[in-house]
Image (spheres, rainbow, N blue to C red):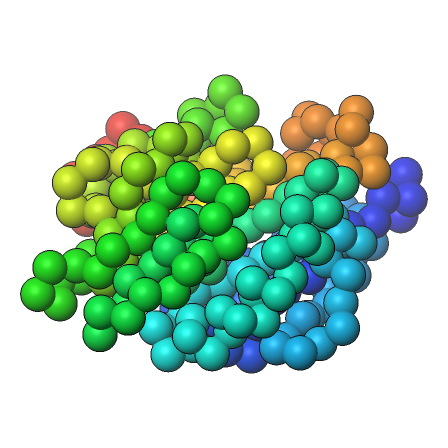
Length: 253
Ligand code: GLN
């Protein structure tokens, strides 16, 4: 095992928040750790489960339809102090779409009903005008602690997220946070929220490795990307190239 490294991951609301293969994110984290001899523990936390989220190195919450978001919101809000503790302890938080929305001020669902979010950040999410949704493949350029990485994914959300002070990146193709701003997601060094499903990590192995490093840093702050043994990403890169080709973008890596 590599230097006795271990990552503890918790997947919140795994049974209801798993749109467009979000589970694949967990599978990729697991596989990329195991191939490097990093021990991985994966646990789940559903509605009503007793769980100390601050004990984990990485917390994952995927996307879901409005119905599922309504089902879990009370449980999520009841965990606010525990999530705060996790953030203070250095847990890395990865949020996709419906999960991303619920960390902001509020989310207005397609039927006009309003859910208050955890309100950790200033952003808020309104519903699209007349039922419009941002749907399709998406290409963004992220800035991950100074490193520029092009990420590909798929988005399908009615929610229009506004007032994002620290976006994950700029939109090259697709929509992102809303129809207008041309920015995507949120990233403040500890919490990464994005509309990219797909799932995100199988198509973007560099981001998967980035998250592995962030999770390892909770117990080992000295760990850097260069400390991870390189894996063969030929297939992943082929999948990315296929998408770039559809957009006639041959010069992107
Ligand atoms: N229900 C939310 C919306 O439509 C989130 C959807 C998702 O997670 N893909 O905006």
